[in-house]
Length: 243
Image (cartoon, rainbow, N blue to C red):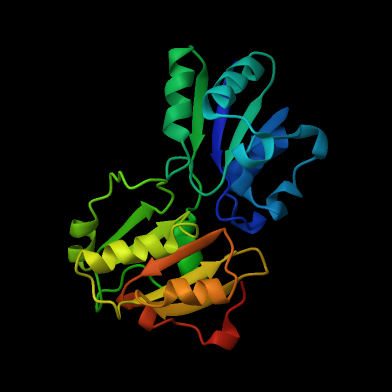
């Protein structure tokens, strides 16, 4: 069973939202290399002797070290590389697969439910609605410096829903970028904190005040930020939301 690694998406954090294939592989694996963002509830379904935490925050490992570790361990064990959400959406799955191919290691990719869609959906916010918008864009909010590969002007002018992942730290800066590039300061924004963990909440505001609201409410990651008209019409009442 050795000589092959399984790159598996864990979904948005609720074990019930794991795919059947993901759960099969978790049960069959000799070793599971887990990211920080797979969620504590999912870690609870993994036997402790199978789980190796290689999240950058908790383990201190860099991406190149993780790549080498996957290759070395896969020579002897059936390894699942378990990543939060979907492996190819800001999950560095592509980088890891490129390294595996370079080193002649076989792999299988198992998609996961991305939090970019699932978390807004859980609280009744559709990322698209034929009466509101037919487009949505997912971006990272985790760019550390002012040199950005995101075209903020085009994004502000597009008019669709914008979903920002990993954006709590740079929330104010990113909201300011959208305003400075022409988006209406009153454009509504919702932030879903800890979306499917059982201890989540939703904050509502607009481009001009959401960063201050988040600061006052002591918002902490992980959180999904949704910018756009779709956030004006949540399909659930507040008291009906269970996240």
